[in-house]
Picture 1 (cartoon, rainbow, N blue to C red):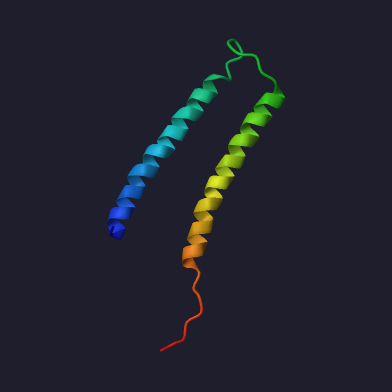
Picture 2 (cartoon, rainbow, N blue to C red; picture 1 turned 180 degrees about the vertical axis):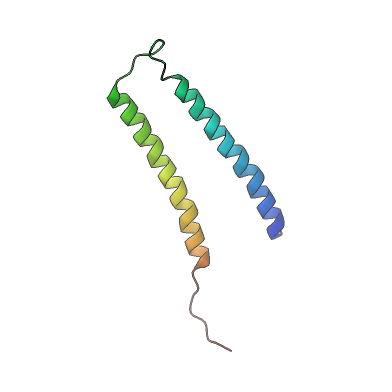
Length: 78
């Protein structure tokens, strides 16, 4: 697969997945309405610490992959 094809595929797949995450977060935001739901500060902290951990792990996977592919190994100069 050519790099341009890989790039286009990434943009399409990642865009859809990011939008799905945003949509789901908006649904979660609807749960903040205290007229309809009862929750405590501990609940909010637990939810968002879990979300933040998953977000941090996902970002780390991308950063690690970038660093892995950017590292230059030893080579002899010609």
